[in-house]
Image (tube, rainbow, N blue to C red; front, side, top):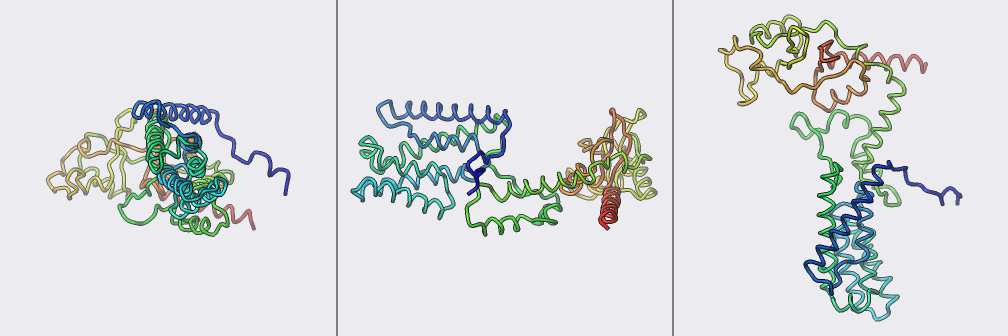
Length: 367
């Protein structure tokens, strides 16, 4: 056994997270205690110690699988049932305590609701004294279930106000309304690869497959950034931009798209300020009705057709930063803006050519 194993292994946390987590735990416990006192009176057992441990997970480690709503509610409730059952059936306190925690762990693992404070809940049911034992199976509801529900509700509200992602779930991103994963997830290490690796670990790892995939992705991006991160948008973008004005007609936009063989036209004014963008899709499909545009719209001004919700790039942006927008954002072209002026446009073709050149350069250096 190495001496370093006894020193902190947790990744350093930002000071802001320390403050947000600590204040959240205090508010969660105070709110839970006061609400339970108000509902059940001062003479009942309105707050149990294991909820303090739940607060640590909820507010200090909200991304942990052990801190998710299912784990908190189901884990604590099932552990309470195991504890009360052992307290009633086993006369020896020490034996009842050990078996109660054993059953709590087993049932939490079987129901995928592992929540470490659940072990303390089961133990409390056995050694909590007459105030707890007199409650019998009511202990499962009050205080365990009520405490768990209230602190979870406070955590949900607090996380929303503090702009924290809780529960820790990100729905899969799809830009084409199909069941396919995003392009970046179809290459490299997939979600299924991560799940397979986690399932074959000898010990339970306190991280979700989704978070592990994000960590791996960020590590790969960082490594790639060190290799080709110097390549910027302004080295790749097209500077001679084909544009239209808001007064240009539908027919004029069609003619420019056809002549220049492009699929998007930035809309700008005489000062080169970007006002919108019109794409081949915009000219063919009418967004409100999702139907093909009628032929009589040929003289319609572009101002009535263009999309004003525009994603833009900056000349100094790294190509890798933009690659994610193209890969998973469903974008095919990005106008490049500098000091509120349109200075270029970068397309998927530009990205492919640049990344291919990077790969060829890396191969030459390797050889």
